[in-house]
Length: 137
Image (cartoon, rainbow, N blue to C red; front, side):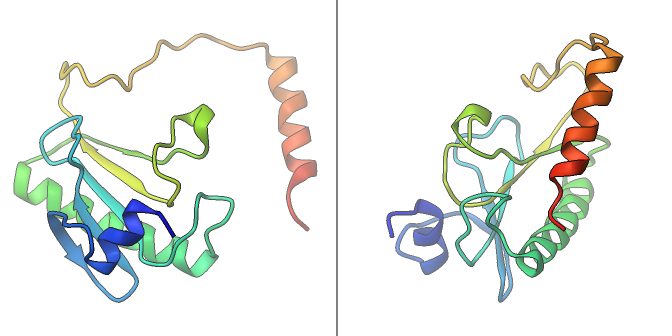
């Protein structure tokens, strides 16, 4: 497999590890959006949210919460984004499920803000019904 994150898990590619347990790994992003930008991954390969197994997702989220507390304590944070992208249209750059923990400050210029613009309520209602109908039974 040619997955850079799997190579980090195996130790064949170096990383700045922050935390590791038997199922997850957290390491510094080498292209940080802000100081303290951490990636949290499951050790078991899953390309995205659609493919990750429930237990692995729970363990990864639990590790992310632990790291969020560590970031808050170490850096004195009062704000943070947790970002997870799926597929090229969402700008997922590595096909291995991962969570970005991005420390934030008011006015920091990190490009994750967007203007609120009300949508068409009837269209929103229609799409909600489609999504509900599409849920696995």
